[in-house]
Image (tube, rainbow over all chains, first blue to last red; front, side, top):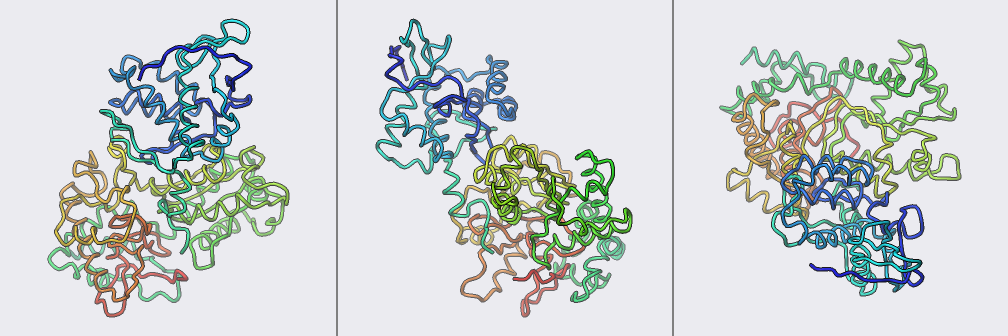
Length: 205
Length: 356
C-alpha cells in the first residue's frame, strides 16, 4: 500500500495530538481501548500494532503487550527493530487498518462516538516531526504529511460509520505469518457478541 | 494396591467430614470399589491419582492454614498494624447462597478470627469499609465470580455513584481470594470486567491465590509455558470419542478441545507423559460412557465427560483436578462425582447439594 504526502488547512480538519485533548481517543496511544486477540488481552491499539512487527518473536511480543503504557510499548518495540518482519514497510498500513478495525469492534460505543463526531471532516494526526503517520504544521495552519493514521481513520469512518457495515467480527488479514504468540491470528469479535452469546461463560444457571 | 489406597485414604479421609447429610464416608473399601470400576486399569488409576493428589487436595485443616495465611497477607498488604484494624475496615462478601462454598469459607474465617484474634467480624459488619474481599474456593470458568463482582461493582453503596468508580479512583479496594483459579477462566472474567466497567479494573483488582490450573492454550507461546495440570486430552482418540465431540451442540469451537500432543513441554503434574495420555483417555472414555446413559430429551449442555464447562464451548469439559474437603467441583471429570441412580457408577467423591 503506497500513501503519498498531502497538505491540510488546520482550520478545516479534525486534528488530534494529545490523548487528553478533544478527539484524543483517535490516537493509538489513547488509554481505555483495550483489545483481545487470540484470548490475549492487549492494553492498547499501539501495543497490538507494535507486536505485529515481530511475528516470529513471541517473547518480544509479550514484552510489548505487558507494558501498561502505550508509549512504553512503543519504546520496547524500538529496542528490537532489527527483528522487524522483513516486509514491514509493505504491510504496515494494512496491519494498522486491521488494528483500527479491532479497536472499533471491541470498543464500539466509545470509538464510534468519536468517529461520528468528526462528521465528514478530514482527520489529521498532528505531530512535531512525523510526516509518515501524521502531518506536521510547517507554517501557520498548513499541515503537511502522509497522515497515514488519519487517512486510515477516515477509511474506517467511511466503511463502518457512514456505510454502516458490520464490524461485529474482524477477520485476520491475508498476509504470510500473521502471528501472535506463535499462533495464526484468528477472527476476533466484539465483547458484546461474546457476552450475548455466552461465549466466555454461562451466567444463567 | 492396598498400600496405594491407604495413602490416598490418608489424603482424602476428611472429605465432607463436617457435612451431616453426606452419603458416605471415605473409607479404604470405598476407594477400592471406585477404582475397581476401571477394571484392569484400577491400579494404574489409583497410582496416578496418588501421584498428583497431595498437591491438589485441600483438606479442612489445610484450608484453615491457607485462610489464616491469607488473612495475615491481607493485613500486611493493606498496611494495618493489627488484625482488628484490618477487619474493621474490610468487608467480606457474603453473596453466595448458604450451600455454596463462600459461606462455608466465611465460617472458617470467622472461626479463625474468633479463636485466634478474639474478633467477631460480624460486630463491625455495618461500619464503613475501605476494602472488599471476595473469598471462594475455585474459579473455573469465571462466571460465578464475574456475576457476583459485577453485581457489586455496578451497585451504589453510597447511593450516589457506582462502586466501580471508587475502585478505579482507589478510594476503595477490591480483592479476590481463591484456593485455585483456572488461567483461562480467570482471563475471561478479567476481560469481561474490563469491558463492562473500565480497563483499569485489571490493574486495580487484587488477587490472592494458592494454586493455578494452567489451561490457557489458545496461543502456542502461552501454551508452551502452561503446566496443563488438568485433564486436557490429545487429538489421537477413538472414533467414538471424536464422534461424541462432533455431535456436541456447541457453537464456540475457538476454545481448543485438544492440547497439542507435544505439550506440556515438561511433564510436572502426572508421573510421565505416557501415563498422562493413558489416564486422560480412561477418564474421557468412561465419562462419555456415563453421559450416554442419560435418558433426558434435553440433557444439560454443560455436562461433559471431563466435567462441566460453558455450554457454548465445543470441548470435552474443564478437566479440573483440584479438590477440596467440602464438595467436589462439577468441573472435575465425571468419574470422580457422577452419581445417578441406575447408571451403575459409584463416585469417589459424593456431591453435596448444590441447590440446583
